[in-house]
Image 1 (cartoon, rainbow, N blue to C red):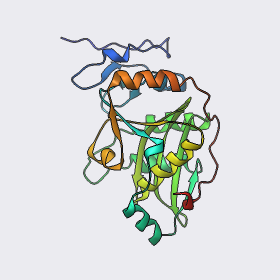
Image 2 (cartoon, helix red, strand yellow; image 1 turned 120 degrees about the horizontal axis):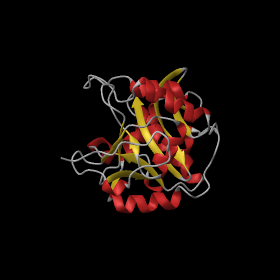
Image 3 (cartoon, rainbow, N blue to C red; image 1 turned 60 degrees about the vertical axis):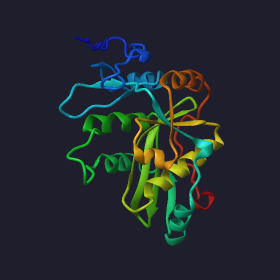
Image 4 (cartoon, one colour; image 1 turned 90 degrees about the vertical axis):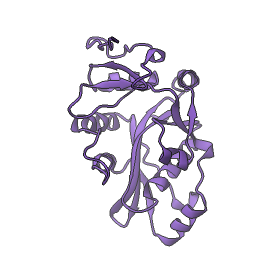
Length: 237
């Protein structure tokens, strides 16, 4: 019988070694603790993230392999360029963070629920208020048609979720985010757990050990603190 470590409520920065996460379920590392900003930032800086359903305890993960995007490699393909030629969309950054998170939390047609529970929404909104969490929004007029949000630690961007209300909305948000991060020498967007959709968008898999080595390096580099309200013109895509 495997005993899962319980996090110490008095030490929000302390986590077990992520290399000791379980193989089954893949990456499960610990449980308990809280979603305070100190604990969340410490987790992401160590290659760890929370992921749990509303009826579960707070669970922490570090899967192997790890799914990532290289910011330099993310470029719109021909079909996306055709889509952009058909629409009048604009892109903003950090203008509607909570709205993006809540859109990502809305259950998808194939899902009965969401892991972005109210406590998660509140915790990441707090990180946004502190200048650590960010969103990219895609608009058609005043309607939000796509978006992505995540957390920046040093020069690592940890992507949490994205959504589309119109075809191509999330892909445009992802491409705009990558273009913005390229300006600041952020090499990676952590996409956490691999799925077919992420691979189709251009994600690749890293062995956890390699990912953790990169995390240890780039999270200690100077990042881009504060709000990222810089406008990202659609023409740059």
